[in-house]
Amino acid sequence: MNNIFRFLLLISLITSNNYYLQGQNTGQGIPEKPKLVIGIIVDQMRYDYIFRFWNKYENNGFKRLVNEGSFCTNANFNYIFTQSSPGFATIATGANPSSHGIISENWYVQLSDKVVNCTGDDAVQCIGGNSDGTGDKHSPSKLLASTVGDELKLATFKMSKVIAISVDPNAAVLSAGHLADAAYWFDPLSGNFVTSSVYLKELPQWVKDFNAKRFADTYLMQKWEKILPDSLYFESLPDNNRYEEGIKGIKVFPYDLNSMSLKSDGKRDYSLLKYTPFGNNVVKDFAISAIVNENLGKGNFTDYICIDFTSTEFISQAFGLTSIELEDSYLRLDKEIQHFLNFLDSYLGKGNVLVYLTSNHGAVHNPKFMTDLGIPSGYFNQGQAQYLLKSYLNVIYGKGDWVKFYSNQQLYLNHNLIQDSKLSLWQFQDDVAQFLIQFSGVTNVATSSMLQKTSYSNGVFQKIQNSFHQKISGDIIINLEPGWTEYNDASTAHNSGYTYDTHVPLMFYGWKINHQTIYDAIDMTDIAPTLAMILNIAYPNACQGKPIIQLFK
Picture: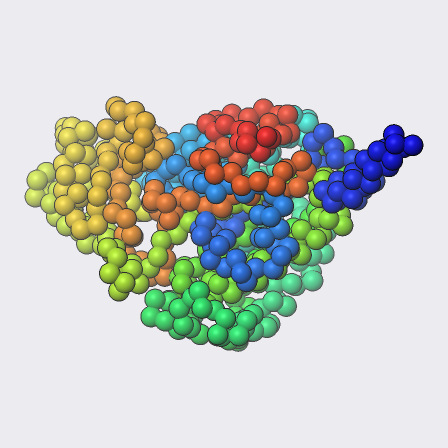
């Protein structure tokens, strides 16, 4: 009798376990590998946003990921140029920009004398845009490493499906990789989700059907109003504070998106969508449609989808880190994540899906705001610095076009002119570095020569080196002081190795993930090998990270 009682008690304990039950939604136990891996990347989400808005988040969005999953509190990127595209590429490849090659959003190519976008590719076509064939052309050709999605496709002889979705083409393409079934992004010209001819020759019928429903028009025909009463946004500065740039000259709620998006010719300006929370909504809508119509997680092989919520970056740029608009966008995103997790429960069950959520970089507070508070910060006037540098070089070396390109704290010199003038490139670079170090806000200047000759194992120069690729990077790399940014017309920025830019949230949820808080230092290159180990596939070919073994303790 006693043995029967113990047996019944054991059965009772097992069947009352919520984790086990959620893994049973499909009538099966928790599988050896997740049926569907879902990457959620929230663009420009600082780590502190989790706790800054914690009391206003609902229980089943961000809080559910933290309270039921593994929360890594000390995850950082380990390079200096924390721009959006390098972040997406690092998460996907498990490598730093020095290896995967996406060092910046744009860079200068000496041989062709052209500035290129990191995913721009005129050799491909935009699939699904306007009938006249217009639309941005993108491919992963400049991504020099394989992604975890690529390795999944290789391991299963392409039987696994891999898809990435974003408002932004760079985010979609770099998250998808080379072998993906598709990378979809939102085309601001047509209001459609489109892709590249690298992946598809024609949009699937379900994508055409989704585009035909004109969800973007529906979102842009409404007003963006505050989700809470004014008095509850006490984590933010008052509306229309002096640190906001706004969108189309408007800085206060409500935002009449219908009138703001209609152009004089009666057509709609779909580019406005990404500056509103509804840019995230339409991405979530499209992601659910992709999962259902592609039957992701329903086959015999693990599928992978990466969902990039990039509107948070554009809203932050327009309104800043202390704005009601930014806070409102995160409260709305929390609801969208809650809806998405509930969908996964009903579609596959918690035990069959592995979700990770993170960000591609953080952001710095507006230097004007910090200065008003008495905290050292400021703007580096890159235009003035270039003008004075060119004048200096003309005096020292003679009149010439010595500087070819400057962007995002990288400067490219005219190698042909320097060589024709029989000058030492190493000495020329050193002279430029010694001149630039004198400017306010500049704390370090590195030359490509010193980065090629010396291997740095820690500190700021290691981060600079991790952003440096010998064939792609500039001759001069500038590191600014904490709190300083280049002069720009945005309300915030990000492009440093300081913690406000490198420290991001990282959560794993579902499948066999335990509830725990991981305080150990995690490098963002560790995500890809962690996924590879879970899926029993090869690490991406340039991977520098290591699996997060704490997840499995």
